[in-house]
Image 1 (cartoon, rainbow, N blue to C red):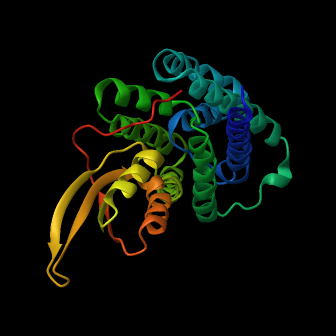
Image 2 (image 1 turned 180 degrees about the vertical axis):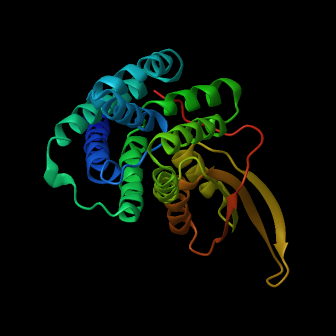
Length: 290
């Protein structure tokens, strides 16, 4: 393995470990302090822990339950998504589960019992932890595997079904532990979703309309930086009465910024119109999950 690949894998591992620590801290500092129930398998695990403790007087480890829940999704990941992706996701699951149990024995981590503060700051910290995994081309496990698998195989989103599952978790939590906790958990999930949308933009698409006289050089930059193509139109500027070329291309939103800078280097006089693309239908290059 050359130095570049080794550095890339080391960076992925560091990001996953940071995400694991933040996830474990978040569960103990904010989620448990506010008696909240996040979405996915973490929420189910915390719900089961509370049920066993309240009704049976049995304290079960967080790690044991979350590991069991993730066995089937991990198998799906290895078979259908990508081996490295799944390995790094397993690291996230194992380390965060272990640290969650370790940190639960440290009372000093409970910074506040204000439920609204726990919802807002817990949601933000949760999104940072998840974003670390996404930037490392991995996931936080659980329902992420299922959603990616369904999207890859059917081309349809599974997030609506996962949302229904999360609603079921909150409904049960509301019946057993009070509706205020379930409603505050919605605030937590909303804060987390909004922060994650701000931090991670790879799945968003941006359309660039570039008017330039250096269309060949800019097309090469688009292909080199994003692996996407472009369509070239020819037109005339009514004000200048000069002919120009316009390139039309769609790229991922996280690629847009560096592409715009490169275009400015090639042609400082280029006119660039950046549009947010709501939906793309047709062929669009998607990097293969390793």
